[in-house]
Amino acid sequence: MRIFLLLPIFLTAFSFAAQRPNFLVILADDLTWSDLGFAGNREVKTPNLDRLRGESMWLDHMFSPASTCSPTRHSIYTGLHSIRSGAYPNHTKVYKDTNSIFTYLKNVGYRVALQNKSHVAPHASFPYEHIDGADDLTHTAKFLRREEKEPWLLVFASNDPHSPWNRGPEYNPAKITLPSYLHDNEITRQALADHYGEISKLDSQVGKLLELLEEVGQTEDTLVLFLSEQGNSLPYGGKWSLYDNGIRATALARWPGKIKPGSTSNALVQYTDIAPTFLALAGIDPKTMDTGCPDANGAKGFDGADFTEVLLGKTQNFHEFVYSQHTTVGINGFKEPYPIRAVRDARYKYIRNLTPENTYFINGIHKGEVIDSWRADAKTDAALAERIAWLSHRPEEELYDLETDPTETRNLAAEVAHAGTKVRLSNILDKWMKQQGDRGLDTELKANTRLKGKGSKKKSKASK
Image 1 (cartoon, one colour):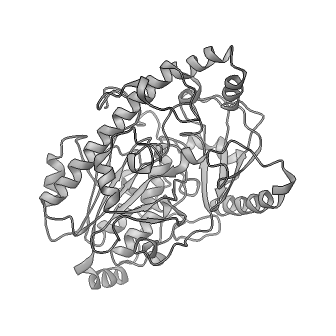
Image 2: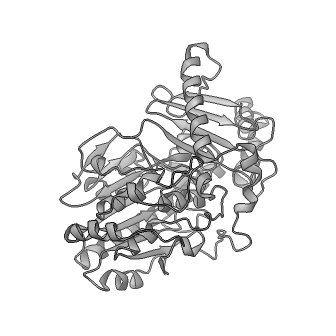
């Protein structure tokens, strides 16, 4: 691990020691941003998250820089986009010497731990204490109570509501309302009902964690950050895509006495901003940090930035653009490379499919009971057949006006009236890819060198 100078960090941290917060990050697994009660889905029962929303700031324009679990989590912890860090396919790892939020906070006196799903590597870059127990918080309580004078960071990375959907209360599939982006049949309804059950199971975990925080008397001293991760794995533009249902996240931040309860921020923020913000709140200047992983220009700082002023309600402006990427190489069922890159501002989204001539196929989207039922129905439904074809073939460029078309159904890329917007965002995307060292298809074809190997964490019923 690269050694970085700690003296100025310790001096700064020491001056803030009396007010350094604890950090509790609660991370869901494959949860579409809008599938929570307070976010508009009144059919899903999430009383604990609804209550947390009333006590928090809702960062309703938080975005993930990727749409699969492992790249997403690496970005949260490192403050770097995934191609720069090397963690861009799924089941991946960062480059040697890359540092993380666990590294930085541990070096200034924080105890650091992660409970449940890790999905990051190598351990040298993520030196956390691992806590077992998806629902049992016995060891969690011991961690929180240990060395009471030391601040701590705990990431509670739930396995819910990732498939297989076999936990939580039962929902009646006949009584739920399907969103417009899902084909309505009995099999889809049952799958969504089962998924909703796991969202409610996640909600119960959130409730128990917040109760534990109260029991140990640390509610007032702890910044709680809830993140929904990427969208669910039903066959639509969610997980494994760069549409908003894939990369937009529900984010709630609670810090009693500092963050205004019930407030909302529309500022564009991204997962890469979390690490530098936590460091700033711990009394460390994030601009002085060496991430151990320089970008293509040789800069060693974070890709993200400190959004403390957003949390404190001092500004609604932050990033002008947020970025994301998706790599298919290495995903179960992968057949042909289908790299996707995107940039989004407050209104428009530009997506570039780097190999539109290829067929996009992975098991998660194109194989299974739900998509098979759609194919059967599509034999007598031309519109559904067209939707299924779209799941495997996209145009080279896509442009969406998210103000008038929030579900991204009307591609404006070929419309003359929007040519200027497309060129502007295309150039911004090029600049970002260059800074990241992203060579497009060449980078995609090297994704196998970034995989953890046969030890990758793969979900199974037994693991849940």
